Length: 308
Image (cartoon, rainbow, N blue to C red):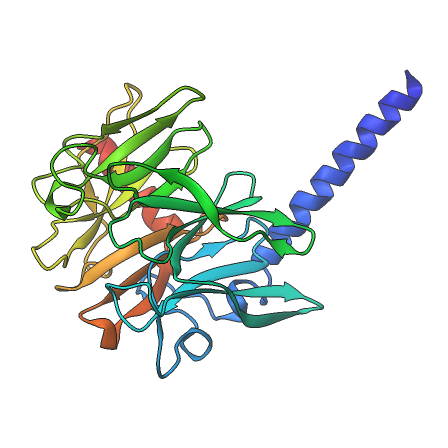
């Protein structure tokens, strides 16, 4: 009994120390690739590190939960994965190392809830969002990507959550997978026997394309690319999960983020909840990943949502 008691205490102390170390790194000058954090106005993230003459950074990025790994896609166009790559930086030895190429022809890296799987889209020949791929963490890095999901409907912007429910942009068997105007943001429920897909419906989905989003790991909110034009220009809005499992009417993230006509997609909130990242631009020539302080804005929008 005594030995078990002290072992339990030791394990608790170890876990607390690990969590404290993670929190300390997020608050250190080395966090976020050592970049100076933004305030309420979005600014380009690490342009000297991510952007090259022949490529640009775009789409969803991903930090590991401890903040010491950063994955991001690069490409020379919006509409092909031929020259696309997922690159990464890793913090070790007291500094950030990289960028390294993780793999080619993929984009939208997304961590599993436990951080040991990396999901991604793309792959050679997949121009119709038919696949979700995954790599597993090993002692030496990551396994080669392998097909995780293949369906007869679209699988775009795949994201897992703590409940086991996943979210995707998809035509969900309505219309043609090639017709992006039929895409909604959907729930994907997977079991041993079957996979079911269901549109989130209104008010999140509207006529036309819906597919770019970020959902919180606890499903408390979802950030969507809303008011999509036929050319996919849009604004960023947020919807909150209600107690009855429905979603609230989306609210604009405000004029500092929605500051005119532009493409806005690849939205992503850092594991510490402080910053929102997203891709924006008018064409591939001026496309960048930007970041903005989000935790204060989130609290403000929660209060607005309660009033509405």
